[in-house]
Image 1 (cartoon, rainbow, N blue to C red):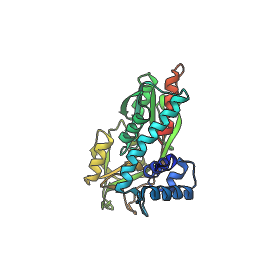
Image 2 (tube, one colour):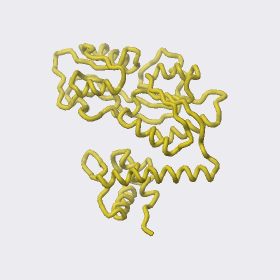
Image 3 (cartoon, rainbow, N blue to C red):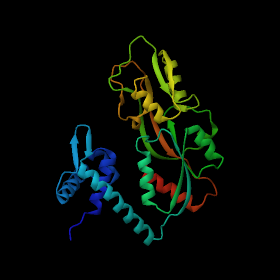
Amino acid sequence: MQSFDLEQLRTLAAVIDAGSLTAAAPRVFLSQSSVSEQMRKLEERAGQSLLTRSKAGVAPTEAGTRLLAYARRILALSDEAFRDLHGETLQGELRLAVTDYFRPGDLTQLLGRLGESYPQVRLNVSILKSDALRAAYAHGDFDVGLAMDIAGASSSSASAQAAKGSLVRRESLAWLGAIGLRVARGEPVRLLALPDTCSLHQFTVALLRRRRVPYVLAHVASGVAGLQSAVAAGLGVACLNESAVCEGVTRLAPPHGLPALPKVAFQLLPGRRGETAFVTRAREMLATHLV
C-alpha cells in the first residue's frame, strides 16, 4: 500500500512554517542536510514538487499547500492517538491572553492548529497589550498569558518585573514602512504607533527623543492589524517586531538615519500557586506549539 511517511510530513510542515530548510532543522531536531533529504524523498513519493526554493527561502507549491492541509490533520490525529493511549488527553476550558504583537500574520492559523491537535480543549482567547495582560493575569483573569518584553527596556510595573516566564520566541525589532518608502533627511519622522499605553510606543518615543530624532505622531492605531494597514498605505514609519512584516510592508532600506533597535522576547508568564494540573499541562503544550 502506498502511503506517506509521518516524519516526512512533520518535516514538511516545519519547513513551510519556518520558511526555510535551515530554520526548520532545529524544530524537528535534524541537520539541514537531513531535512533536505526528507523533502527530496517526500517529493519523490508525491510525484511532484512540493516547494519552490529561492534566496528568500522556500514556499509551498500548489501541491505542497494541498499536502500540507492533509499533513496537519494526519499529524494532529497521530498526536491525539498517542496522548490518548498514554493517558495524556488534555480537556477543559483554557483562558488564554496573548500580546497583540505575537506573530500577527499567522496567530489565527497557530490557534487553529492547536484546536486540531487538542480538540477537547476549549480555547477562550483575548488579545491585549502586554502591560494590561500582565495586570489581568496577576488578578487571575486568565489561566495562561503570553507577553512581550523589550531587551534593555526598564519597566516601572511591579507585575512586569515579577511575571517573567518561559521563553517562547525571540525577534528583532525593525523600522518598517511601505515598499519603496524613503525617510527624508532633515524632516521629522512620521511615526505610526499604537496608543501611548503600549510599552512599545513608550519605548519608541523615548528612543527617538534620547537620540534627538525629530518626529511627529502621524497616526495612532488601536491594534497591530490597523498599524500594519497604516504602514502599507504609506502614512509613515513604525517600530515593530519582524513577524509584523506583511504584504505591502517591509524593513526600511538603509541608510534611513533611525536608531538601531533591540530584540524582543515573547514569554509565557509563570504558573501561579494553586493552579490546576490542566492549566500547567496546557502551558507546557503552548510552549511547544507556539514557537
